[in-house]
Structures are given as structure tokens and as C-alpha cells.
Length: 233
Image (cartoon, rainbow, N blue to C red; front, top):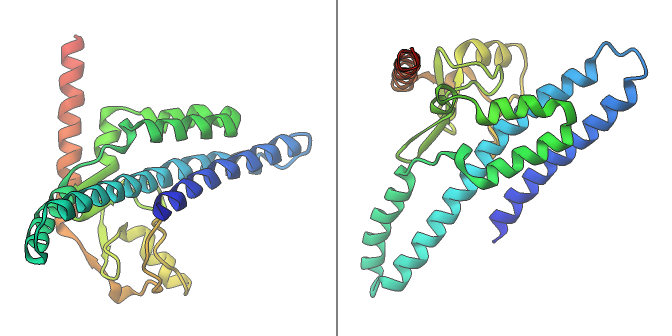
């Protein structure tokens, strides 16, 4: 399928970019660049893992929807029956939570990035494996809505969620507002976003529902960590 091909190509490109940056880092190590290339490599590795989460998630959901549609087509005798059954099946697929970090495809990607990035691989493993605390905050699936609890620009946990009405993606207010006020022509930075509109202040609305989910996940994570520490004692 073309979508899967494009998704795989995107993941391969991310790995190839790490190889290029690693070669550049090794080359300039003999000169005094103040560690700029190495720092760029480390940042690129972190961003690639985050992008891979989104790409693999989209790929798995696309495959699930494709499979569901074929099943509905084969079992439906009329168009009306197809529409009714498809509405239920597609909704079930959209509501299913996908823990990307437990998938072999994502783990294999991390290994490839680790190999390409050399010493930066330790940071990849930390981000990919992490603790239960981190994994619970990576991605939330609510109906057809999938979003990261981390701001796409600062990579920090979102504190003041702002939703882009044009595409539905979430940013932290303290990140997005200075960026769009200082520069024009800024589009949604989320990988795979089909929205081509430049972000305007009136496109952004505060999302109290997302803020509540983030706070709840944080509270649950703290409780889990505390309980784990008590068990170890």
C-alpha cells in the first residue's frame, strides 16, 4: 500500500539523517566547533524518536482501518448495511489505544537510530524504553483524537494546552505564542499534519479537557511511582 510505503520511507529517511550527522560529528571532532554538531545530533535523535512514534501510530491505525473496511465489505449485502457496520467498526478502531513503544517496528527503528547515531544511542534507549511514568504521558487516544502530552517545539510537558482549530493538534501556549508572534509563515510542526494553513492567534483555543487529562496522568504516574517505592521498601 502506498501509505505504508511513504511511512516506511519517512522512517528510513530519519535513520539516514542520523548517519549523515554522525559522519559530520566525527569529521569535525578534529576541529574546534564547540560541540555544535554533536549537540545537533543529540537533538535530532530525540526528535526522530518522537516523529517515529507518530509515524508508526499512523501506520498501524491505517492498517487497522484498511483491514476493518475489507471485512465490512465482505460481510455487507447492501450499501446501507455497509455504512451502518462501517460506522461502528471504524469508531472501534479509532478508540483503540495504541502503545507504540511496545511494538517491534518501533523498537527496531530505535535500534537502527542507535546504530546510526553511535554514542547518542544511549539517549535513544532512555527515551524509547523510559519508565512507566514517561510512557503514560507520550500519547493519548480519545475517539479519533490522538495527541502527545509533550509540546512539539520545546519537547517539554505541556502545561497550558492550546488546540489548533485548523488541525486539532495541541501545543503549549508558552511555546506557540512567542513563535507565531515573532514570525509569520509558521505551520503546525506535528509530523504528518495535513493542515497547510499558517498558524494565526485566532486559530488557537485553550483546551481545558486536555489539561485535565494531563494533570490526571501526572497524578496517576506519581501514585504509581510512590507505590512502587513503597513495595521496594
